[in-house]
Length: 464
Image 1 (spheres, helix red, strand yellow):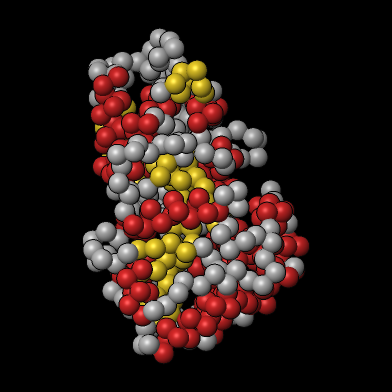
Image 2 (cartoon, helix red, strand yellow):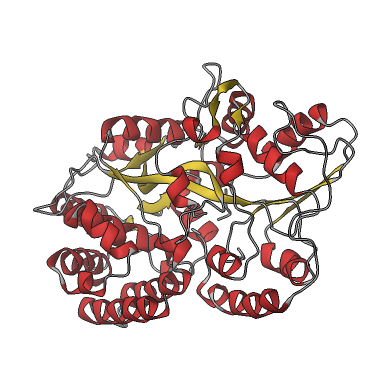
């Protein structure tokens, strides 16, 4: 996923505040004025039941993958499967964290890759690409036969919410969010056993435990301060659990009145207490995700917020006996959703650019990704779940952290929620992140945070 979700998620998980707005604005104007390229693609073959998009056997395929927390080895495996099917094709592969730097010039020139994992801190914002007409409608993919069982369509084998996560206001899906991500808090099972600490289910117990942890000489909490996406996991999950699914929908719809309501106030005030009571790891507000996560792995802090890419991203820094464990955000009094409720959903967006030369090959690459073979390879290589239902073979062994998210998903049952504004309203998301960074630095109070976010929602609604 991301080194950096979403990134991660998703997930958009590691969007640096300084990078969020400027590249997107430049791309919007450049793409809108670009007249080069072929909207329908140039490489075409003969369509059949086995080749529903009409991929030309000898058409080159250009693949760009965000090389973050999930690496890019899994994509190389997918490319091998593609090559077996289209033996005459030459597949070019680029794994990079510089998505904007590498690809914005190509989009502007009308010469984008055929398939892109558009993720990470330098992600090209999806709503910007959509509004400038740079994305292929993936409805044909959804209606294509599922390779493992052609009696089913691709849309029939996707986890709930996958299509919605990739859709915009015209109701069509333009991105395949491939990784099924879970967001929440994380802790070391080994540390908690050694100290005799019990993972809290309520916010009151969480705060009491933080005081106990602080007295032991360990910081109760750290976060990826340079990327306030992460602390927003705590803020926005508390709001969702306290206000319920209807409130989540209203937030996605940019209903500014949400930010005047008790659920928002209670959540922001709760998170502010972490900073106000001195429970933060010193310096965490200025740390990158890798710096804070490594400090957490070293036992300098007890809790950290993140998505389920965390374990894979921190493999080199995590002690073998660490016992990485997932925890849903603890409950506030009066929550409409139970403690077990978690934010989970499709993340890590894959796109087929509208001006891709081998657009058909890009669509087929996504279809291959949604096979049991490819999904299992991803789970084994990247230690995470995909959006394919029952997509992990019985022979795949998951690491402790990822296994704990599977347990959490089972416990959550139908009490799973997710936000879509991160995809559809990136400017609003930036404003929320900026406000949260100021909140955790104690440069603003909860009331100020609410005013700023309400104003951002009003601005986004007017823009829509």
